Structure formats: structure tokens, C-alpha cells
Length: 363
Image 1 (cartoon, helix red, strand yellow):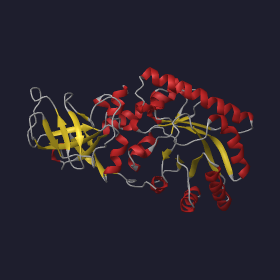
Image 2: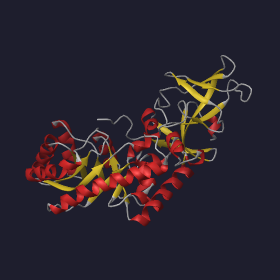
Image 3: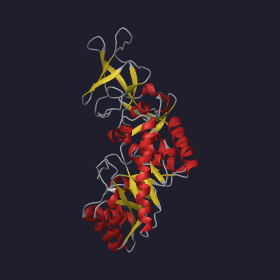
């Protein structure tokens, strides 16, 4: 089957690009002795996780229990749940996973830690936890200056093993240059290293020092003292990665194939992919809601639920009803949660469907 025969809107993933992105990423980390625990939120696919593990990843990262349950059922046996667990129902589900696969999770409050300690006591198997650090994003985490005392309080609860620390800062959307990102990563590494040093001084065996994001993994020379990174977007790349300078169109594996359905006025065309197919997230620098492949002068200027509006100079570009385009989304991670499956392609040929196993598993 050729891509042109797909009913639109359709999400395609170029498997040649995926394989190259995975291989290149692991090769980039190897000289620095940094392990990789990819975040599956980008693809939510057991098949894609298996590709990452086969290339050298040490395990996976999930945000939600629903994702972890799907991937554990799919045979993935080493999972970091990078999200605070609150509520007896979630603790019971975590306990079931904890008894069958290697699970780590994060703590940034004693309330969360007490629940996990109860899991450790009930299962007879202490829970491995990472102290999450807030390095300025103020989303989750303890302040670095409070981390060691907090870790001691967690340790005192019993039935928990504080095995390390985790941090995440959303650097990809800061608009910093690559040099600016490198400098920010060095500052983050310094802050994390100071926490690790204090933890070790207090007798903790710090085995895991986990840094977040594709940004960290793309710039491993800026990291020091980090044992593993949790990169997600790198497998597909997107318009944001292009804006930063991490990717070109040729590096972006995920695209939305759309059909022109209306040309209401000169310089405008409408395609059949709206906010229910593309993401409404903005890129760092690129205007609009995605990059139209092969058409640098065309902007996806607005989205409604089922319509995407293109804007362009009619003296330079024209579209006819029925024309097909490919759009690289601004944020790849959102796309997988908007569809039951994507089409794996090689070149212009469709080689088969890829199931989005954890679609909608957001709790």
C-alpha cells in the first residue's frame, strides 16, 4: 500500500527515521557512560519500546500507572513511574506492578512517601524511590536545599529504599539557543551534584541520578554526574526540535497526512486535520501549528476541531481540492494520544499499522 492510498487524516511514522534516531541517540550517550530510560509518552507503543530496549535502553519511563500497566503486560520489566502516587486505588495498582516487575517511582512529599511505605510493608518488598528535585520549574519536586533532610525523613519511614534523585526542567520550550541550553544543563548538573554529595555524606547509596528530556540526551557533554536520562521526543522529533536546531525535516519521523478540502479565498486552503489530529501546542519559534513538509512558505495558521487552515502567498504557492500534504506536528508527544494507531512506513510504502497500546491511559 502506498501512502497516497491512506484515508486522511492519517498519522504516519517513518520506520527508517525511527531506527536511525534511536541508534544515533544511543551512540551519542555511550561515550559519556550515561544510560537511557526513554519516556514512552511520545509513542505509547510497546513495539516502539521494544525497539528502544533492543538498541540499548535500560528500561522505560512512564508518567501514569495506566501506561505502566500496559507496558508491564507487554513484557517490559524495568519501569520508572515518574509521577507522585496519591490515593489508595493507585497504591493498590502500584503494589500489583511492584510484585511482578522492577518498579521505581518518585517522592516529593511525606504524604506520597507514607503511601509507598505502606505498599512496601504490605508486599514485603521495599519500594525503590527517587527524590524529585525542583530546579525552577515549580511543577513537582522538593527544593534542592531541603532534599537531604527530606530523604532522611523518607528513609525513617521504613520499607522504602531511596536509591537516587530525579529532576526535570522543560528546557525545550525556553527559546534558548543550543549554547544556552548547554549552559543551563551544566547549571542543573551542578545543582544535582551538590544534592548527591550531601546525600552520600549522610550515608545514602545514590545509584540513580536521573535527568529529564530530549534536550539532556542531545547534549550529554553538558551533563556531569548524571547516570541516566529520560528522553522521549528524540524517537520521532518534531517542529520544536527543528526550531531548537536538533532536527531537520529529514529527522522527523512522525507526520500527519492531510487532504485539501476547501480553497475559500486566494492564499488560504483548508485541510481535513484539525485539533483532534494535530496538537494545538505552539512551537518555540515556528509560527502556526506545524511544519508543512516541502512548503516552507506555508503556515498552518489556525485549527478548529476538524479543520486546519493554511495561509500562503498565492503568487508563490497554490493548492487544489484533493491535494495532499504532510505536516510535522509542533509537539510529537501529543499526537500518539489522539489516535488508536499510526501507520509505519518506509519511503512511500506503508508496511503496517503500529498500535498505540497506551492511548488514553492517563490515570
